[in-house]
Figure 1: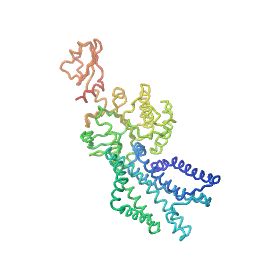
Figure 2 (figure 1 turned 30 degrees about the horizontal axis):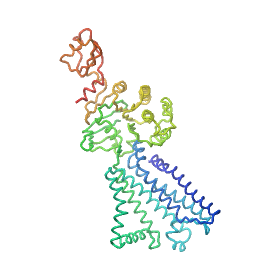
Figure 3 (figure 1 turned 135 degrees about the horizontal axis):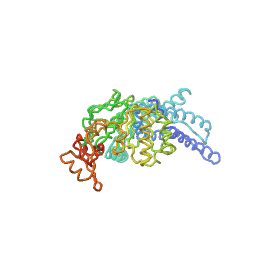
Figure 4 (figure 1 turned 135 degrees about the vertical axis):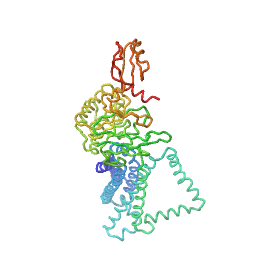
Amino acid sequence: MKAALKYQILEFKKSTVIFYIIVLLVHVFFASIITVNDTTFRSDGGFEVATIIYLFISGLNSFKETFGMFIQNGVSRKTMFLSRTVSFLVISLIMVFMNFIFVRVLGLLNSSRFSVTDMYENIFEKRVDTINGLTRGFESLMLSLGVYLIAISLGYLITVAYYRMNKAGKLAVSVGVPVSVFVLLPMIDLTLDGRITSFMAKILTTIIGIRSGYPYYMYITSIIAFALFIMLSWFLMRKAVDKN
Amino acid sequence: MSIEIKNLSKNYKSVQALDDVSIRFEENKIYGLLGRNGAGKTTLLNIITNRIFADRGEVFIDDIPSKENDQALQKVYLMSEKNFYPDKMKIKDIFRWTGEFYGKFDMESAMNMAEKFELSTNKVVKGLSTGYTSIFKVIIALSVNTPYVLLDEPVLGLDANHRDLFYKLLIEKYSEKPSTIIVSTHLIEEVSNVIENVVVIKKGKIIKDETREELLTAGYTISGSASLVDQYILGKSVIGLDVLGGLKSAYILGELEKDKLPEGLEVSRMDLQKLFIQMTNA
């Protein structure tokens, strides 16, 4: 378990360093530009959004190669899965704290023309003024952690599911999902005067906590979603075999 | 201390790869796992190492069920034909990680072997030829120091010099630190001098599990002028013939009656490859 965990955590090392170099360079670049040009730069939760995309892609790349390496090295699927889950928690926690620090450091430069804020502040704008700094910091960290875990575990679930599917299954999902979401659903929604989208928006804003203004809804949603994605991943990978 | 396989069966759709296989691989012996293409050799090795699952039956490694069991799986290393290591990983990093997973991996020995094979450990897996891909995996197998080492077509793509070096290192390693080694190969003639026990698998069934000596004493080879050989083999169980000019060699199953051997004929040991062909044909 120790070696498997070490391997899976270190897998993220290089790409995470590159990610931070790029994101920081982008911020530094824009901070420099506004000093010479009459322009503005706003990053409202941009750090976290970039992290969510990065973690989702990392999740997508977290199965096939590692699975091969581990079956070659006598690691059971159970250990692969447990160490993978722990590695997701570790990498998400590391990025939560890194982002927390970076956003606050860059926030010191905030002015009328340059602004870097976090995701929490943008979603729960009204709540920020009603709580103390410590509670705000804690809630912000928890919100980021929950969203990051959802992103990475969803990516992982998708890649494990694709690995287990045969060619016909992959084709059906690859075509069926986009067609359903981007063609069929809007068409049906149109015939129902937008009732589907307004219902979905209502559900989404409720489970995220936007409607109530409380982030706790999002914590519960994150826990449920992460647990669900991880459990489904285990269900799919426990019988995974070399397919080549 | 052994790998014990009990009533193992595996089907791939309508193809029965293994059919109720039961066998025991004992401690510190070198086995040759011989069989034609598609006989079930790789399937058997893959099930032992938990890479695929059997439909029925069980595998025990030192009395521990191997299925999804880290403790049992850490006692076995399978060098397979297919590469499972990350394509972009350097060989030296693969050695290092093997050391993390298998605590007894001997890095010094691996680096020495790499030098002998002239393998650059700074190269990535993807950058290696077929022969060198086999070589780096062979080096790991010979340095991993697990009680059971399984080699599936270990000399695939290796030239004659490297094959010779591999067999030499295998014997050296076995003499220094004995372990159970199972070599699955098509190159029977080459491996016949290395193995102590022969397991022959045919259409998913074990048809022979004997020592090499037992198997080779099941018959003999007779050589001489073609006419003499033809006369001698009448009524005998001949499993193969080789003709070179006026000389002929016949591979015969059964016990040699020395007193009935005509002059001008020479007797030698049975040929393992000929015996294998006879056993696995049809």
